Length: 215
Ligand code: AMP
Picture 1 (spheres, rainbow, N blue to C red):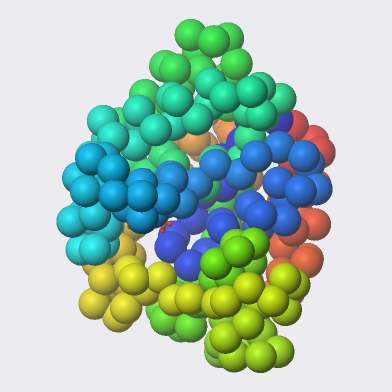
Picture 2: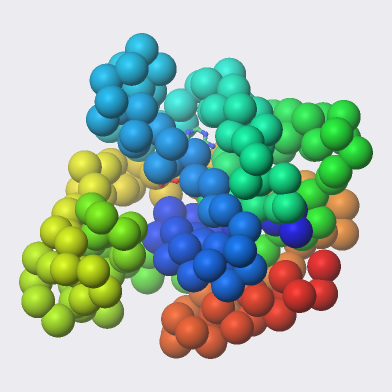
């Protein structure tokens, strides 16, 4: 099942990706996670990516396309995957199509998590992530039982460096300008499924899961 979760920063791609990855037994592949790991490891690629990430801008297409090419070639991605945060603009989507066409394994479906713009800021400023298992909470909307600790595994919760108001504003602008055109791109390919990304998290998972079951 070769799928993409599309949506603005804060729309729930990461949250849904973690759950759906377990449910369908396919990896969630997040370019944001891959880039943050490279920054943390201090690799040359991480150093190149960090400036753009801190500013809420896009990292160069060459870097992220290279990361995806390498990740999709790994064993665990051979039965499918959920792409989260990639593609982020039309050139990346075209590069992905070309890559998958060569393999004779085109994308099967793209799910848009549709969230009103006003709600995104609150979601992003309140977001906290578990260092150990990646579970995502929101201190305003879905708080953990204890402020700094993961309910599931007891891991420490942290706030992402780019979840500050200034960077968030830029990331939302970049989404509108560069990523939102992908909605039309995938509509033309008849691959787009739009789902309201608000309300009960489990209900959203069920709806995305139903799309995945169909494709
Ligand atoms: P995310 O975790 O998806 O919100 O990504 C965090 C940051 O990583 C973004 O604000 C970008 O700076 C960078 N990034 C993640 N995915 C991509 C991508 N597909 N293309 C360019 N930059 C990306």
